[in-house]
Image 1 (cartoon, one colour):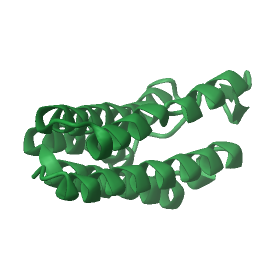
Image 2: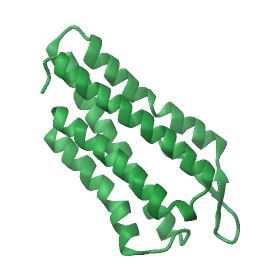
Image 3: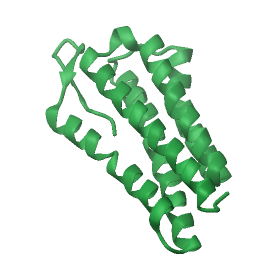
Image 4: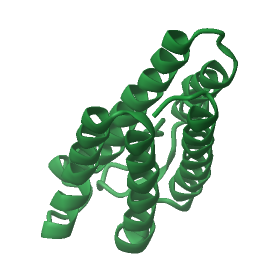
Length: 161
């Protein structure tokens, strides 16, 4: 759910790749399908599987968000700082913890992780990233947080922990 950035020959990030932006928005579909699965599938096992898929997919996407910053720092497009290293690595750790916790707690941790990464990205790295990218990330973060929160609420209604 991350968009690729285009860099000019001097290394500065300039704009988004349109195809990557489209794919980023399409990356929301699995969250929608998992929400529908938790809310509408007939059996407990099927609803639980939909919940586990939402957590696993969310963990992978959150780790990927941090990996984008890691890759940009490795390529010399963003400066290496302790905050950058933490911002690049912490999403993967939170995603792994969410996968281990599972259930509603794992979903809640993912909501916190996506929201926290959005804050980090906008407050600490915002001056180094293009506004189009930040706008895309804001929209995707809001949608993903809402879908995961709704999945958590429906999990309770569906009898999932």
